[in-house]
Length: 128
Image 1 (cartoon, helix red, strand yellow):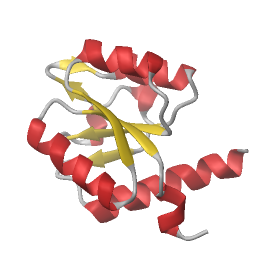
Image 2: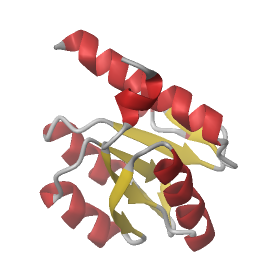
Image 3: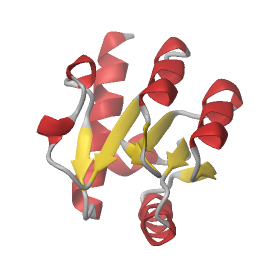
C-alpha cells in the first residue's frame, strides 16, 4: 500500500483556535486525501465532538484559547481514537502524562504532517 493510499479517505477531527492555522491544516489534510469531519475552536465544542464524532484521528492544539486540551485527549483515548498534538511551544512544556503523544511544532509543514500521520497509521496497523 502506498503512502497516498494509507491516508486516502481518512476522517479527522481538527481542534484549533486560530482560524488561519485551522484553514491551513484543513487544506494540507485535503491535499493528503483526508477529510476534516469537524473543526472545533472552543473546549466545549471539542469535548462534544470527541465524545460523538466518528473519525480516524484527531489533531489537537494543546493550548485552546488558554485552556489545555488534555480532557479532549482523554476522551479520544477512551474511544481508542489516535490524536496528534500541535503546539507553538516546545514539547518540554507538555504534561508528562502525554509525553509519548505524537506532536507537531507550529508552523506545521505538510511533509512533517504527512510523515507523522503515516507513522501513526503504520503503528496502529502493526498493533492489530
